[in-house]
Image (cartoon, rainbow, N blue to C red; front, side, top):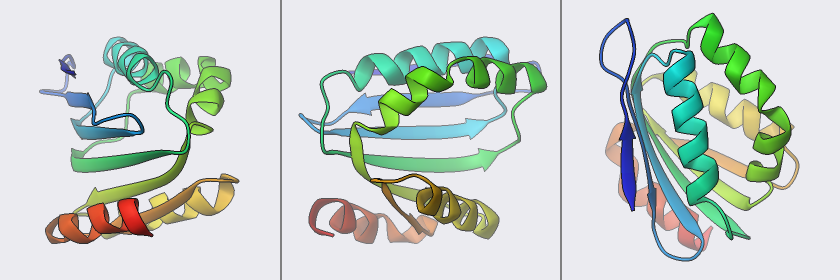
Length: 135
């Protein structure tokens, strides 16, 4: 079950969520989210994570631009739902080519109780999958 969310005045946005079995989702993201794309992406993410507990998340970040102010507003308005979403997961592996994104991901993991986040470079997907499954 996959769906791509497209839509941005700045260019192409790709936010694809795929359910991989009972307790895993994969997210592929690149581009710059505007408010409409952020709303659709969060709806898809929340829908596809329903019923997951002790979950695993693989998050691939491609070319990343900071979201628009409208997109941030949408995200902030959905914080209660996002906190419920994040509690469904124990581990998140982030694959990103930019060092600052990997560092930011691991800092975020230190701030979210019960969620281990580990970041990997683009060429380390096999290691990311192994860490997700076996720690």
